[in-house]
View 1 (tube, helix red, strand yellow):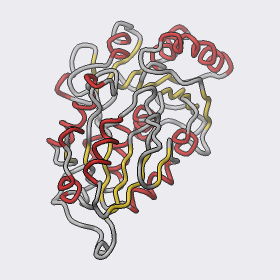
View 2 (cartoon, one colour; view 1 turned 120 degrees about the vertical axis):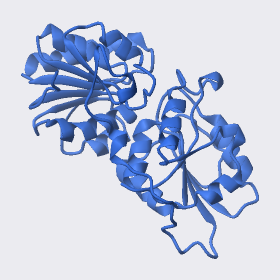
View 3 (tube, helix red, strand yellow; view 1 turned 180 degrees about the vertical axis):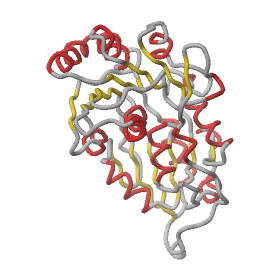
View 4 (cartoon, helix red, strand yellow; view 1 turned 135 degrees about the vertical axis):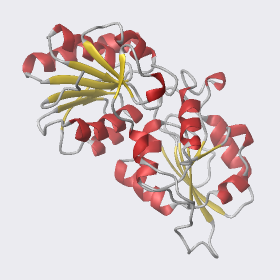
Length: 313
């Protein structure tokens, strides 16, 4: 099987799914007149600036009513324009887009998120039953049958010995950037509480990207969302970056040469729909690209140990 090229309808939820399809579009040969279909937020507006973009209302994980609402705009774009292929990296929006593409007899491909280390997501498990949709995994370990392997975005990065890239810390507070992603409606209070606890009484400056974890009790600067440019600026400002294990955030941090401290969201605490963030964290830690901690076990010394190391790109 071959991933479609040319003028494509590129469909993905925001966050890690959009970050992946944005990078994969260059690899697979999407033409400049391709159309991007996603949700409207600061990430999609900045990441897709200058590109043809169609937005649909946000679809939360397992939100089947939201999936049904997206059918009309998907059918409308497929009716108005001709495409050489429809490609998606998930999440819930992938199913209606690829079903609509197959009904129009357009070549379709589903590229499973690199976060799925042990097997396909729910969207992948649904789409693998559609013979006309080519299915791809980014992990050779579970390729086979309906699942083909061609590329993994994590393979572009190599671990090198951590080395400080700042020499201006003497005499100033430790700068910490905490980013929780934008997944809604899942809060991540356990990490916010733990960072606040271990930093109490320490000489620190903290900047927060909180998503839907709205808080009025955090010290420092806090934002719900950040544009791609502002996100990069805070990463450059920080001595250490603490992040959830969202694949889009991880990919960008690795691109910027930063070895982050990852704290996976856990299903048992109601922080995500499942524990795929544990899979991401473990895979990247085995590659030597990140350090990982559970929110309840994070210590201030962990932040000091990771103050501004770089990784190989």
